[in-house]
Amino acid sequence: MSFGSEADTRVNGTVRGSATMDDASTAGEAIGRDRTVAVVGTGTMGQGIAQVALAAGHTVRLHDSAPGRAAEAVAAIGARLDRLVEKGRMTAVDREAAGGRLHAAADLAELADAALVVEAIVEDLAVKKRLFADLEEVVADDALLATNTSSLSVTAIAGGLRLPGRFVGLHFFNPAPLLPLVEVVRGFASDETAATRAYETVKAWGKTPVRCADTPGFIVNRIARPFYAEAFRVYEEGGADPATIDAALRECGGFRMGPFELTDLIGQDVNEAVTRSVWESFFQDPKFTPSLAQRRLVESGRLGRKSGHGWYPYAEGAERPAPHTAPPAKAPERITVRGGLGPAEPLVALFEAAGIAVEREEGEGGDGRVVLPGGAELHLADGEASFPYQREIVYFDLALDYAAAGRIVLAARDGIAPEVLGEAVGLFQALGKQVSVIGDVPGMIVARTVAMLVDLAVDAVDRGVATAEDVDTAMRLGVNYPVGPLEWGARLGHRRAAMLLDALHGRYPTGRYAPCPGLARRAYAEEEAR
Ligand SMILES: NC(=O)c1ccc[n+]([C@@H]2O[C@H](COP(=O)([O-])OP(=O)(O)OC[C@H]3O[C@@H](n4cnc5c(N)ncnc54)[C@H](O)[C@@H]3O)[C@@H](O)[C@H]2O)c1
Image 1 (cartoon, helix red, strand yellow):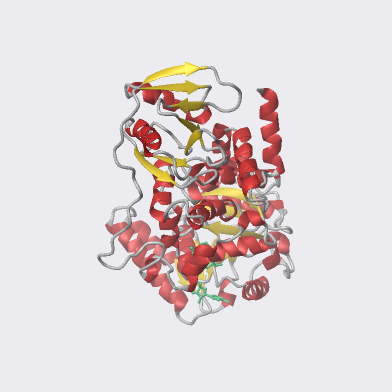
Image 2: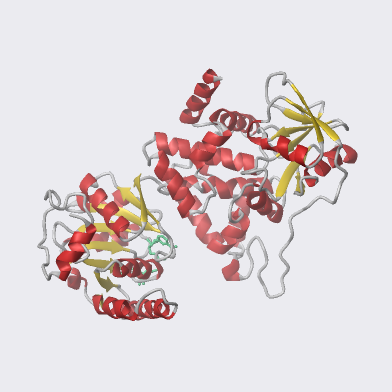
């Protein structure tokens, strides 16, 4: 039965009776628009989810334990629909009809006809468990039960249920009416049929669902951790300041926002709580270690935009610090490119287009490099620092797209002669790029962040958390990454990512950077195929 035919059923005035989960007519299909959806907890997320279900044509019942809150939510959703009508995004007739289908339920017992209940109450395991135990007494045995928890175990919430098979996670993102991604989380005891019904239902609501196993952080909050953590580490090590790191990830890495400005927007307390929860759920695995610098911000009350100060100041008139940008320097007239530059190969055509004479030479094993007349050798960030070399190695960071990048980031050892470094700066400035010079940090900024994202994404796929396609979809839609981490891994090369992490593991032997077995295996296969 399709979504459309169920809608027709309603038009014809036929209301479907309840069926059991195993009923072949409903197994794995979307819940019909003629069925009631209940939302419990009518704060930020509950209201958003209710609006989505309402827009899809369901009758929606709202319940909240705080007296009067469900009625307030009905009014707030109504006001939002009114604004959609004003903006011409909803017809007055549809608005009227939607209003007629939205009801506040003062008592949980009023949710008895719900075919799906989505819970969005306080993030507390005991409170959620109690609610679902009560709900099981109210709804039919074939009703789907879903939690919108961001950080609790779906399996644990379902732990005490009489029928845990019909329980799943439906993790919407805020604001739910606007953001397309929904992680459909299958708990340890969830039936495949229940997960598929939940998946098909949110798909019919116009969302982009992805399937995932019940794991700390699900897909997005698990794999995104190093995006914040690596930036905070580079800052803690004195490699660069927040504005420069943000600019590197935005203008060179292609991310929509940098980690410092993004966590100021999210709230340092909220972002840190997610990190700590994932880290603790993984029994303090060093891949997820939180940041001391962020801890200090939270302790001091610098929570970000909402408190007027986070990594950056937000008081009226406060100036946002600018990234460090190198002053103009003279470009070399000719350069030698020795060997292939791998992911940085597009730079060669850009150098030539800028009028720089490029001489190409065979490489002597290992990675390619750009040799400048003044003596500097430019290498793509590989996880090493430049200080141990006898030669003047200047590292440049990985870019998502070297032609489109507005900024190139360089790292060199302390004490490098200014004219030697200046020639490297001038070379990239000749391409019309801003250049930032950071400290001699192994793996730099974008390269180490991307390598860690690739590592966690590969590991999640290998452990059956989600398919590669769903991981990439989730990271693009959930946190706006310019490409999914698995696609990025394929572009960069697993071998390169694994070698970079191996080098970092040598410098920081905590286990954080040890490539996961699946990355090492893929790297080996690439090596064999060379
Ligand atoms: N805010 C987000 O960005 C976001 C995103 C995804 C998931 N989540 C998850 O969604 C859930 C709700 O988050 P929120 O930000 O909407 O919270 P919120 O504080 O805005 O709203 C929670 C509501 O639940 C009500 N409530 C508390 N205990 C209840 C109970 N026992 N029975 C009925 N109602 C109860 C409260 O009165 C309140 O109105 C949490 O599990 C959270 O982790 C939040």
